[in-house]
Image 1 (cartoon, rainbow, N blue to C red):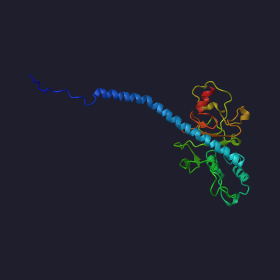
Image 2 (image 1 turned 90 degrees about the vertical axis):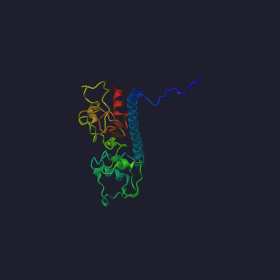
Image 3 (image 1 turned 30 degrees about the vertical axis):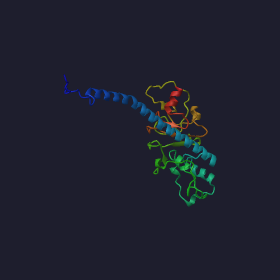
Image 4 (image 1 turned 120 degrees about the vertical axis):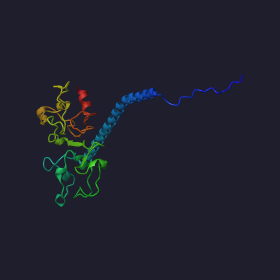
Length: 258
């Protein structure tokens, strides 16, 4: 008997069921929850490493400045006349009467940009003409209003420079955690915070800015200079602070001596 091939066949599956879609979504969400923190951490470390690398580059540029001009630049006109004395030693023919140079604009926040931008070739006015740059600044990161130079996407974390000769003029005080300045090595390694709610930063200096001769403490980089940066959080005195004297962050250093 001839078979009539008219029996309906079951159609092939065209898509996912609702349950299968929900399972897939849940799996993706779980993977995202696992991967996202790791990615964010990696990105944060990469940005931190970029800042540290630039600090090292600035350090070398300032060392080259000393090699070129005989001494490290001052961080400010303190004591009075420090900037003019420094520039006049390099360019004895500087005619200060022929132009106006506001020495008050030289501060620990601005000195890096102002001095590493270089001098011109006019020995009577070294601040004119085409300067001989000692560092290739990314001009998009220079605040043209206040001459501060900051890491990429961190305008509130400008690099801060203090030479050893001015450590005691611009010293970091634990009584004002957000005010940057030269930092001292802790008197002794500390094992824990006492009391527990006191930030680690408090243990870096006395509660007032006083001479290391009084406290027995020494400054980091006692014979050269310090470069400081508030880091990714743009707040000075916190765990992610970076410098040219800690291999990593402030927290890395604190953890290493606990």
